[in-house]
Each structure stands twice: as C-alpha cells, then as structure tokens.
Length: 435
Image (cartoon, rainbow, N blue to C red; front, side, top):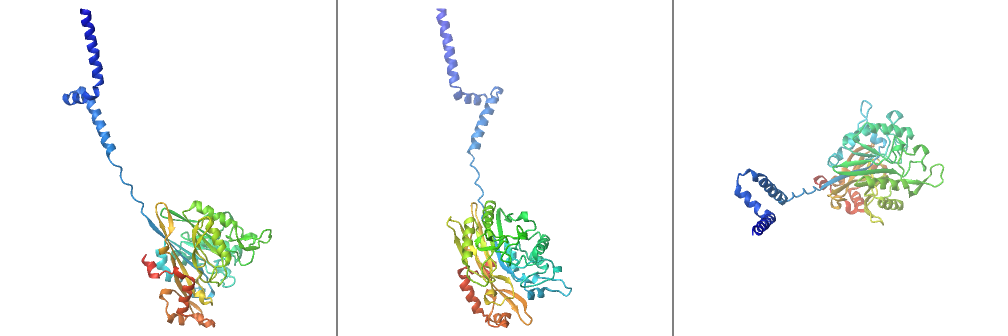
C-alpha cells in the first residue's frame, strides 16, 4: 500500500513539473505582474520591456529618401577670335602696351550666365618680341590672353590652321602665356607631347564634361614631324607619306580613340573640330561624314569652327543609336573680313538638363543667339559686336564693309542669312538672359 502511494506521488510531481515547463510562456507574465517589486522577477521584467521596445523600433517606418534635385548646365561658345591688324590697332595704348577687354564687353552678360564658356582663339600668341603680324602669318599680342581670362572664359580652343604660323617655338611660347591664366583651360595644343591624349575635363556640380579640340591641319598641306604630339590633328596622314601629307577626307583614328576614352571618363563629351570649307555656309561632305563618326564614337555635342561664316545646326544620329547636336560652324567672333555672311555670327547656347540618372540637351532652351560683327572704315577699325535682335538698318548702312565695294549689307540681308542658315534654332537674346 505504501509503495503504491509513493509511486502515485512521484508520478503526480513529474506531471506537474512537465505541465509547468510547458506552460511557462503563458504564466510568466502573470507572475511578473503579480510580484511587483519582487527582485527575483526584475530580470524577467527587463527582458519583456526590451522585447517590447524592439517590437516598437521595428514598427517605425523608414524615412522617405530626399528626392534628387535636378538642375541645368549652360554651355556658351563663340567662334573665331580672328585678330586682323585693324582689330589689334584698336587695342594699342599710348604707352605701347595693349588692352583687349573691349572685345568681350558686348557679351559679358552671357559669359556671366554660362556655366562653361568657350572661345576659339584663331591666332597664335607667340610673343610680342617676335613682332606682331596679321594675315597670312599671324602673331597676336599676348594681352589677348589676359582679356579672355578676365572676361571669364573657361575654355580656349587653340587647335587651328594658324597655330603653327610662328613655328614650334611660337607654339611653345603661347603655351607659356596660357600657363599664366590657370582659370582658363587651353586645349588643342600641348607644350609636352606626352600630354597629347590627355582628356580635358570641366566639372560642374556632380557632372564631368569632357572637351576635345582638333584642327584639320596647319597651313602646309602636311604635318611636320616636330608637330607630333604638340597639335591635335583632325585628319589622317596619307598612308606611306614620309612628309606627313594630310588626307582631308579621312578622320584621324586617334580622334575616335580620344572620344571613346572621354566617354568612359566623363558624363558628357564635347568635340570642337576646326574644319570645313572657308566661306561656305553649308557643311562639306567630309564634315557630315566626320560628324557621324564622332557621334558614333560617343560625342554628345559638336562645336565647329574655321569656315569664317555660320553653318547650320542639326541633330546627328549614327547607326549605333548615338545622337549628338552639331553646330557645323559658329563663324567668326571678331574679324574685318569682306564677305557679308562673315558679319553674321553664331553664339551657341546649349542647356544640359541633369536628372538623377541622365544628362541630356534640353532642345527647347538650346540654339543660336545670332550676332553681328560691326566695323568702321577710314580708317578700318573694330567698332562693336551686336546681337542681331538689337541691330538696326541705320547701323547696317554705316558698316565699314561697304567701303570694299560689291557688298550691300542690310539688316534685311542679315535676317535672311539667319533664316537660311540658322533656321529654327534661333534664340531671342532677351529670352536667353532671362532663363
């Protein structure tokens, strides 16, 4: 009998123990609440509060990411700074030095507004001590560089057919002139040949803009061996030529390689070729071919110079799906040339829109602000640069170009040139300044 009772009690104790263990998660909270300040349950209370806190933290919603703030980058470019003698003479001061700040005062508002501003320096600054000269072998005063820098230009294009006018020494002197103005990125010409394939990049906020510059050749029909690496050449050298004879119909393969390299390094690629046929207001077949090849390689914007007259603006779409906007020729910025079309000039105004995932040309804000180069005669001298919007019939009637004979420049003709060449890309000057 005692043995049976003992077995019963042992069985009951085991049953109660197993039941208690099985239901611990249900009754532990009750014990904690009932015992209040009982020190034995403090650790249980802390554990419960911690678990509740974790639940509450996980329930807090994640903050909404700050939206990417989209913005615009504005690129402004003008054509050939073609410093004929009668323009240089206007800059001469009584003490024998020169000052050319007046050249850029008419466009200062646009320079101040642009994020990147570009000018093509047609003539070389080889050093005043070498003797200043004009066409056909230019040497312009070094003070021109100071005026360009002070005006606020960011980039100067120095690869032109006149870069070699004063020889390789003149080019090296010009490189040293530009070294005095670190705010200006001079491209197209190199003091060190090893720098030939360096990719010039301008940074605006979080975007990198690559800008490349090439000239079809110097005024020799050939590229001397001493120029190798010092001047960016657009056209190929004829196969087998020992004198560096230029093949004007074939693009230099190094240009393609530079563009591809730039595309890998930058968000947007600008190519500035010195090309085309002088005084032709329509692009040549090789300009069209080269534009397509450069676009296929990765060019996003093409800004052409050299013909001394404006040429059309158009989209270029290559077979691989790439697309670029091509200004075949901006014409001149300053000159005293004799062709009526040369007095009409293009200021390229390009607006890039930047989103979180893209950068592209905003066509609605992009185009050409047409300008007029105005000079006087007796003596011939630079007078002013006008926006075509502000030019008048009275100014056209007193333009110095009439003194050459055979040219009847009128406001109506200038407007006609604009309609024929610039077409639907014309921008009103006041609209641009109000953007």
